[in-house]
Amino acid sequence: MKKIILFLLAVAVGFSADARTKKKKKTQAANEIISVSMHRTTCYGRCPDYTIELNKSGLVTYTATMNLPDTGIFTKKLAAVKTMELITKFKDYRVDTCLDEYDNRIPDLPGIIYEIKYTNKTKKIYNAGWGPGFLKQLATEMDNFGKQERDRSWKKTGFIKKK
Image (cartoon, rainbow, N blue to C red; front, side):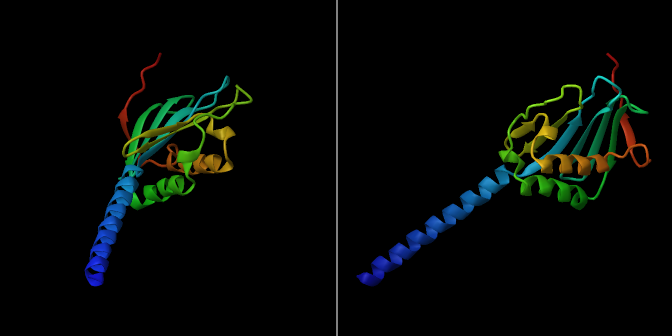
């Protein structure tokens, strides 16, 4: 009788552990980052206004809005491994735990706005330049993907309508 009870208990624990593993995998898939974009806003002067979006598939989109040599929407395809390196840093730094907005103490300075798209949600961080230091570091790394002037591998895929 003891053997039967122990056997049933072991089976129940096994099913429970299997269910927890499936739930954990499902949660991880729901928290997977699909893309990350960074928008640098303009200032009262001639600060450039642009957005860089990195997709986990390797597609990089650079949208140059104003105060840049050439405005428009530019795309480039990179190895997915290269874009995933930076996307993984967003996950490692736990940007999902950052505040949604940080106080901008000097309104004339350009801002940094992140938009992180997960499988089932989107996280926006306004004025990220005033947040934790790693957000500025990530912005610099994002900028490196958008070096439009020096790299002629960008393909212009759209235009920006002037207001």
